[in-house]
Amino acid sequence: MVVAVVLPWVYSGAVDSRLPLLLCCALACATTARAANRIPVTNEGGIRDRWMLADGVTLAAPAYPQAFVRRGDEVCVAVGYLVNPDGTTSDYALVKAWSSAGATSEPAPGYWSAFAEAAADALKQWRFKPRPEVTAPTKVYTVGTFVFGMRGLRNDLRQRCSVPDLAARLRELKSGARRNVMLDSLDLTPAAGGYQRDNAPGGMQR
Picture (cartoon, rainbow, N blue to C red):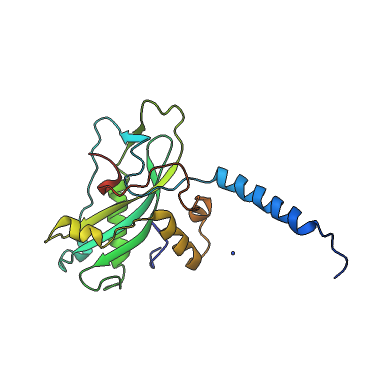
């Protein structure tokens, strides 16, 4: 199931003068502790310094949703996903979408969810393994961009759903979304996580 994040689919008396300083220190310590326990976020392609495709695995591409095949629209979706320590993927969320039928507006009921689900079905088939130098793999959240019904240049369509700074995009969505457990678990501080910020198609070298 894909989590909808961005589109329907998808916080009097005497006072010790030292108190403000003590509170600031306590809050800073608490914030640091929470950040240390949160899942790092990296842009598309940014996992390649710690992860590689599992043996015999290719990056599966999504099929065009049958319910909308007759429309023939050109569509792109950017879907966030979690890479787990065992190399599987989970926690899919639509973070950006575009269609030739109406840009970012939904042209028909269930439209965005159908394309997001198709992308998630492809992502479920992706499998990774840690690079040899990584002895203790940990979770990381990233994003993949998928195109459907492409008639022109692939990169032109992909650019419609480009997410140059995933953490910033998720912060933006978090500010306007209902409480979301996955978003709350991510480290969305700028340049967080120690992962490189990249934008390569698919998130990995093929």
